[in-house]
Image (cartoon, helix red, strand yellow):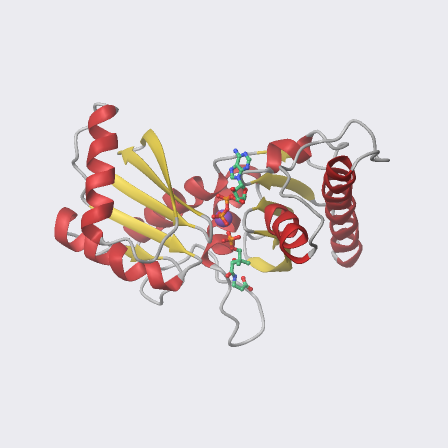
Length: 259
Ligand SMILES: Nc1ncnc2c1ncn2[C@@H]1O[C@H](COP(=O)(O)OP(=O)(O)O)[C@@H](O)[C@H]1O
Ligand SMILES: CC(C)(COP(=O)(O)O)[C@@H](O)C(=O)NCCC(=O)O
Ligand SMILES: [K+]
């Protein structure tokens, strides 16, 4: 069984595969203090709940938080007796190398999203991932990540507004009925929702302006479904792009005899 771990700045998602068969996804908050033993207790409890035997013999990790990788390596080594593939490390091969400025450490989630989206949709893509940050990844015709855009995440912006302005409450992000808010909460929700619709549309239009071929826009990440309701911004919504990308990169390394 393959354990694919997508560790973002907010949440860590474990997905389990039996050969080519996808079994389940488990989510926990990202905390770098969490030890290998703690991960194992959590994982074995949930797998028992799903009646999935713990037969993991391969692990691949993508982490935007470098500090958590240590404990995930210990988890793989101690409990699954294997060395994990860590996306972004030289020993993990990529189907296509990114074409970016020399010395740039591209976020591994963006490499994984590019590989997953290219496999599903082909090239000439913008992948918009609504995570802690909102990232736009440009995937070229041949599947390489060739750059993109990083904007503050939706919840991050709302949190900043609440923390820095004394009279603004914590609010949840939602699509407001009207743009003109008639109370504080409605005004904030409008600013975030319609502001983000404008941001996504504006950034994608400008990317298309700089790119010399037609592009499709694929959305993913926790808040993508919400923005799917805000005019027709995306060609596809695919919540499994990151998981799929991890699978693709693992299979590529296996085919190359690297694992
Ligand atoms: N299904 C959901 N509904 C609402 N908010 C969500 C959902 N999933 C994630 N979020 C929120 O979206 C933000 C990004 O989450 P996530 O995609 O897990 O980020 P990351 O990959 O950076 O850890 C977080 O603030 C999280 O609380
Ligand atoms: C932009 C990110 C913080 C997004 O991470 P996430 O919101 O998924 O936790 C991550 O991809 C990252 O740390 N990138 C490094 C810089 C780069 O990709 O160019
Ligand atoms: K992510």
